[in-house]
Amino acid sequence: MLSFFFAFLSLLLIIPAFSMLTLTLASLKTKAHQLSPKLGQRDISLVVIVPAHNESTHLTPTLQSIRNQMGPKDRLLVVADNCTDDTAEVARTFGAETIERFNDALRGKGFALAFGVDHLRSSPPDVVAIVDADCLLSENALQLLSAECHTSGHPVQMLYLMTTTGPHSALRFRVVEFAMLMKNKVRPLGSFAIGGACHLMGSGMALPWKLIASSNLATGHITEDMKLGIELTLQGTPPRFLSSARIDSQFLENSAVIKGQKSRWEHGHMAVMGEELPQLLWQALKQRKAAPMVLAMDLMIPPIAFYLMLLSAVQLLSCTGAWFFDALKPMAWVTASGFAALSLSVLVGWWFFGRHLLSMRELLTTPLYAIWKLPIYIAYFMKKRSGWKRTDRH
Image (cartoon, rainbow, N blue to C red; front, side, top):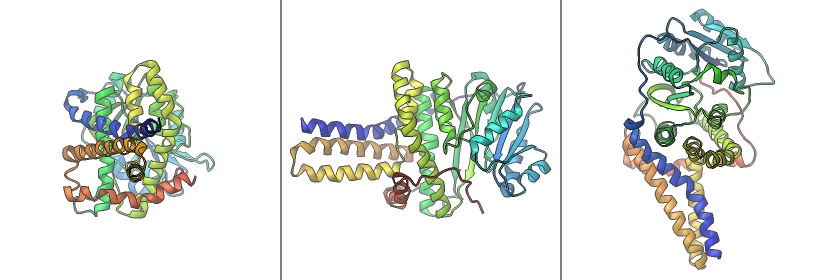
């Protein structure tokens, strides 16, 4: 009976590993499930909202990237949110429609987006796209995004990656880039192939007006985008993944800045996991629909460095205990299978998507990256959790 209990606990522990392996293997079916919206003369109206907090130094390239792809009915709206620099002036000089918001109590991207949407209510567009103030678009990205969103009536998320300066960047920065590649490309490809859904990522996403106009955007949640995508999925309109369009931002090669970014993202992910995962799983079973199930599969995968440390600790304890107690032997074997599944998913993702970032030898050193991130997880469990904060790009 005791051995069954320990085996059951270890089975719960390895579910995220097999979820990740399932999504990674499914990502290899890209061509069969890739969206191909038709390009042509746009007859829909699009507004691109750019929320910006003290982004005057980096705003102009983003606005130019957007302006180059706008159609005759399109509008570019910059929401200068709680700015203490000349962000609004830069946006107006560029020719963008610009509104300013000041509220020290209600801070965060969600409030800025809600302010922008309220501004549009008197003359609503067909589609609203959201682009962060430090991002650049691939060719035809806006046209592909708006066409798919308008045709499907669903939210659409394009491929959103953050990159370093190239293959000569320090290893720790390329490891971060590979981790984001796995999270923002490989896993969404898999979830869309299986269940026709992906998580929203905050930038490079579009929603039909009727959906965004009725959504609760004004939250201070650190990952308001992920929560919004889950809410829309439970309402029957899961986000679709448009991998043929891409939006890029660049990591600053500064360890302190990257650690701050990772802290916010990973604290937010773990917070949403605790808040939304039970409901997603329940609704997936209740509705018998694949979309909430694949989002739950993706959401239940903890930050990989944290998960690797957790698996390692349990594996060490179970293997040591198995020498003395037979009841722990099944737990040791089950945990080992989780290690194998996690390792295989990373290897497959690297082979098909990430070999330009890391060599095999470098890939084998990535578990050491978990040590660098240990303070992030200690802070989370000590309740010192990250809130909304602008990344320092200077």
